[in-house]
Length: 155
Ligand code: FES
Image 1 (cartoon, protein in one colour):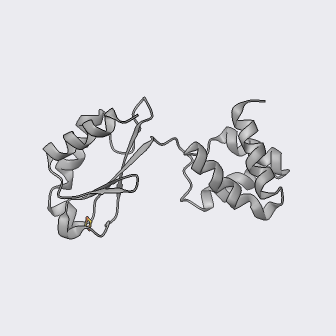
Image 2 (cartoon, helix red, strand yellow):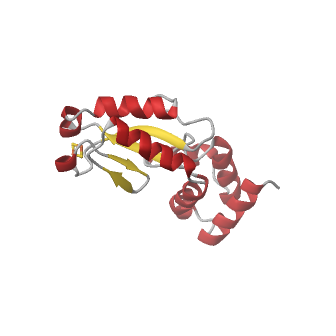
């Protein structure tokens, strides 16, 4: 049995094998694995005695669940009007340059994923971005480079 199989066995045992526990099971697996692979969904289906299509349907219906791999640090740059007017495109370009990836991509070391998001509620300090749960505001190209440098040094 591989590590993922073991983990899924544990998660299912913890929540219970009944179909109505599928959502919490999926949530916990996403939390631990950071995304839901096809393999994980197949294992969940087996473990709970339901069809893989059922698992997949539920996972994609609740689109907050990631079915693509994401980095350890998820960067979300605000793309809404105030940030847009305050230069979010330059911020995005600086991030792409610092991380050597394009919007929507993950670095090969799986450390960073670059995404856009809607207004973060920090318009008065635009442009803004989130890195996981931390907000970074009044961004400039220089600031972006030093923030990324700092995150790159983190384990
Ligand atoms: S528009 Fe970017 S935080 Fe509100």
